[in-house]
Length: 135
Image (cartoon, rainbow, N blue to C red; front, side, top):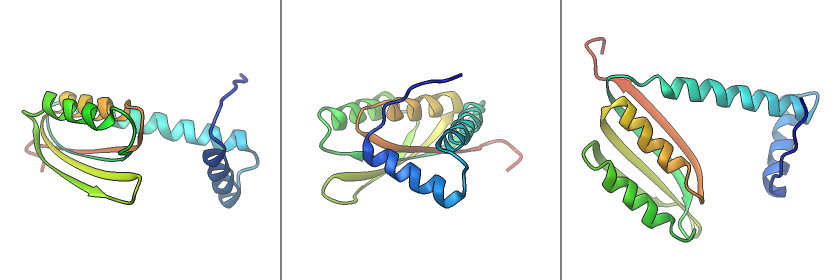
């Protein structure tokens, strides 16, 4: 199936450089691989049942209108499971935030998904581990 996608020039240039370095035969093959990786990551991220400890790492453009307020609202909404957070100014335009959570895995995932859906958030990574006896 064919689809059309609009991308910023800088993002596409970076992607093209990566697929060239990795030896893909075409941009389409690189996109298929990226989509497969995204699906695997999503499926892994959704398997968070039970009590979990999680770390959300995000990089965002602090100048994006309303973004800081939206992130604050999310932190308040999930305040009962957020244990700690760290904020670092990476450069003039970007901030790094690390949020440590402990609680129901579905709530941990929901907090990460809310953060990743905000305009101006450039990268989000959720890492979780079980609180069960197997640790």
